[in-house]
Image 1 (cartoon, rainbow, N blue to C red):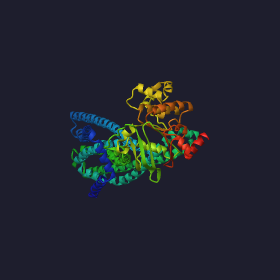
Image 2 (cartoon, one colour):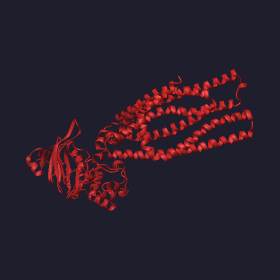
Image 3 (cartoon, rainbow, N blue to C red):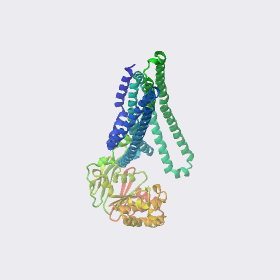
Image 4 (cartoon, rainbow, N blue to C red):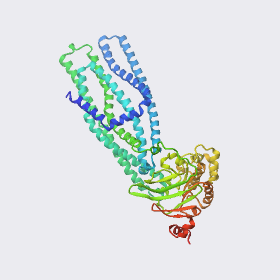
Length: 602
């Protein structure tokens, strides 16, 4: 028996070293410990002081009892009492210092890690966001950041501090009662056998819990973003039922985890009672069978010191037993966060070492482009088109034909499976992505407005722009008039995604951004689709001014928008099926002519 448990502990330690948990712990400390090394050492020093004084307080019980029973000297008892007060006071300040230092480190670590995750998300390719739900991203980022801080805090503040405390208290116990202390060492490791099965089950449920949390977050996000559609189609009961199912499943999962964590308590209480009961039986047997007259005069003090040390050691021992179980849940969250940081290739890696594009005219050329979002669903087939400075290029055709995908490729948001895309005879995928995009102004059909003021939203077009430049861009976009009628004019808060603005107002702010950016290439994807007829005419005049002398690509379903384009491409089923001027395409009497007749009649 005496050889079994040490071997068991050694085996468990080797298993932990080779496990994924050990890898996570090693990485967490490698990523964060060096940054706060000095503060961690100071906190550890405070822990050593507090732990040593805990052991000293148990040792002092021997002097207290023996002084009261044997020496009966009040002055010595007075000094002992004052010493005890000093011990606990210093311990209190040391505990306060370690708690504050670790809290400040934790706050800084969380802030730093949040920025790291956010910056990494900004660097990821668009494909990642296409195939990952919002709830999964939120869960990986938020839960992982908090869990990383918790792992470090527990390992240092709980494991390190409690191990130190147990060391000093164990030292006191051995010095007072070596035989019974050996019994404690035999009984203690028994808990490891029971805890292993709890850890295994906790890991399984923690993974499923994280998945359920991601589902509930996604559902909440969908509900908020689609609230108008939900109310319009009276889908409240449907959505409520979905959320109830998810929440109920999450509740059951949390209940199982709570029960697993609570199993530590009866295990430790039973083992603690077994140890203390053994001590009582031993002490009782000694006094009744050996006799009090043969006892060492210091024995009552030794016994009290041992019991005090044991009782003080019980709480940290119980914490250490439960730490491995609670940390298993955190490991799952940290693992998911590192998967986010590791398993996706950041977009910037594709452009490392590349030179920026040198834009002169703004000529754009797509040659033999093939592309698919997934291998089994090809979107574009051998697409070739071009536009030169000052030209307007129209893209028309049925919805889903690939027009918007062409725009995404020009903006380097996706990389084609074959073919080349050039700006001024420079391959955009052999250049930095920022330089390629800086040459492009884009106004999409679905305009995104950031949380903030009107002025801040327009300023995104050119971050260093002055207010006069912003106002001028708003005037050109026919937005100045409605902006000045808002409560705080350009400083008006627009709400999340421009909730305080109408669709047409949001579109005009987006067009103002394009005016402010003043890039040589302009992409307009149904840029006037959210405007009424009167506003559309005014905006169209503004857009004509915007695109003068620039390479302009226009996606439009209303063919009146592209009639004056220098070249029109008809895109259907991922192919260019017609190209030419408006007059040429009408005379050809094919797809474009049929679309024109459907919209305007003969």
